[in-house]
Image 1: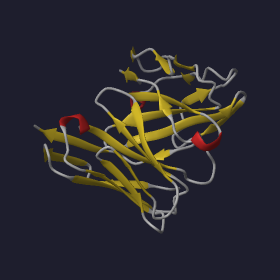
Image 2: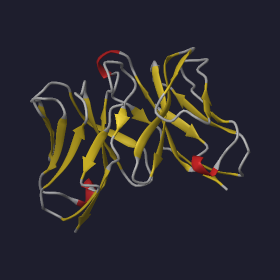
Image 3: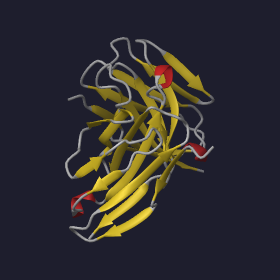
Image 4: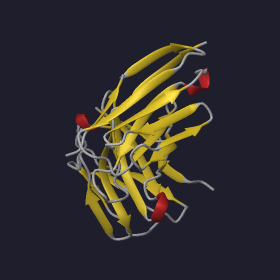
Length: 114
Length: 112
């Protein structure tokens, strides 16, 4: 069981470039979310989804887009990267019901924007 | 918006010592979740607390949620180097599920 898979693990971008961070889970979880982790700030929620075709904004959504066309995939798009988006990004998923907030996290994607 | 404040921000303890990490909310919590992150890795779920006064233990780690459901503590007994990492508390800002908000984390170092 692969769990939550994030790609790429490392990425360097120039200001203004666009890219997509991929996230896939094989646990048939309905809930998926994206967080960014910055020193001293913990994890901040960017976007989340409660099922295919449904997405909503989190605490820091500006500069990021998401879509959820399938249950398995939840890509995060940076349309025009800025240095302030340098961070470690984590994708997470969870089932519905009693375990709805027991998140399974991916290993993270470290993004540097120059 | 709900905020979670963790204290201390960092902690260095000698192996074998006990320690406590606190997580305080500005609002009533609908659920409190503790996670651990090893350096350079993703987060691992530790424990979930939902009821006021609830206490759970796993091996040498005990988590408690106060009666008012605004403060939680994570206590490690007889710390070991394997306990080192970043501990984060997460909570639900409302009854909505799938949308956890996290504290800023507590970095724990255990000196052998």
